[in-house]
Image: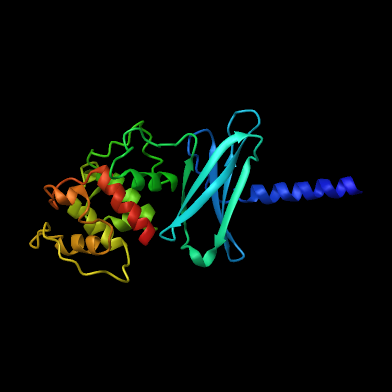
Length: 260
């Protein structure tokens, strides 16, 4: 009877562990098979990590975590032998704003999702979008942060971070125009129209063109903090009509995801 009870208890424990991954998206960080899932239960938010690497006897251990902007968990972990394949952290639901995302940092083997973002201005933004599974269509080895972002790419990401359909976000283009580059002004116009801002600072931005058709929308994006005067695109040759780079789009959209 005792063995039977132990078996049932073990099965129940396994069921609880696996349930964290049922109905939640598994984000593969591609650094050996770490998946994370988020769930809210009983006033507590749990972030669970599962190791799916191929090494015999390998497991993971969480060494620390922090929460940034009430929306992003930054979790440090190590992979060693004789560790459990499942680890979990928790925090009171009142301390975060759902939905949340996670940035996983393997301490003994730092992971970079794209080879050309390390040390770049957009690195953190790209990591946030990547770990939130919003860059599944960007499967190239490099992110190409300096390349102009296409309109269809921007619409897809803007819809994802604002919780709307791309058709709801798009107020400018027909189907035959979606493969062209999106300008900074157009991006601000569409993104500001898809978001509800409750509090905005009132700033003055010398590099903005007050006569531009999208001046108010561009200023709204700056006032909301989705793009700032500290960005290199603002400091050097800023123009509302310039194509929006993929790196600058990542910065704007990652902040929009946190703010929305």
